[in-house]
Image 1 (tube, rainbow, N blue to C red):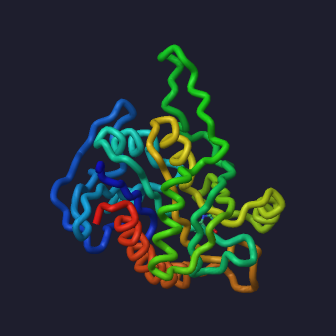
Image 2: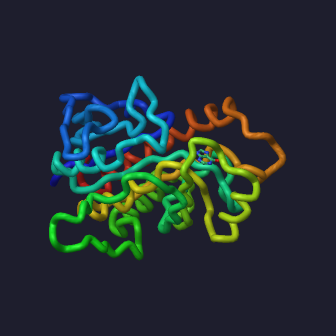
Length: 249
Ligand code: HPA
C-alpha cells in the first residue's frame, strides 16, 4: 500500500509522534513547496507530512504555492491526502472545539494559481468536482472518528475566503445564506488541484472561533490558540485511527 500524506495547517507545525526518516526537498514545475516534505513513521505506518504555511516562516494563505505543494506530494507517490484546516464556525452546531469532515466546498478565493492546466497539453482539464472530497477517504475518516469516539460533523459546507484578513459580519451572513457551515482560507485550491492531479483528497476542519458577527464575544487570538492546541491533539488521534482503518498501522 502506498503511503498517505497529511497537510498540516495553523497550529500543526509538526506531526507529534512522527519519527522523521527523510526530508524531501522536491523541485516542481511550479517552484518549491512550502517546506521540505517529511517522510516518516507514525507507529507502524509510513506517511508523508507537509506544513502548508512552511516553517519557521509562515506563508499567508494567499501566498501559498498550492500547485507546488500538491504536485510535490503526488510526485512522491502518495495514494491519498488528508488536509487539516482551521476554520471559523458559521452554522449553529459549528462551535469552537468541533471537528467537521466537510463534503462540499464553496470557493470565494481569487487570484490564486488554481490549476495545473496551462493550456499546452491538448485536452482541457474540466475535472468533475461535483463531490469535491474523495468519498472513500471521507468514509474512512468518519469510521476512524466513530471507532475512536471523536465527536464530529459528518457533512457540511466549507467556505473558503481569500484572507488574510478575517471576514466582515455581512460577508459571513452572505456565506450563511449560501449554505456555508464553516469558513477558512486554505481549503482551495488545494482540493481541486488534488482532483486535477488524480490524488484522493479529504479534509478535516477544526473550528477554532465563531465566525465574524456570530456569537457575542469578539474574536480573540488567545482563545483561538487554546482551542487549537486541544483540537490538534484530537486530530492526531483521528489520524492514527485513519491509519488503522486503511490498514497502514
Ligand atoms: N475566517 C477565516 N478563516 C479562519 C477563521 C475565520 O473566522 N478562523 C480560522 N480560520
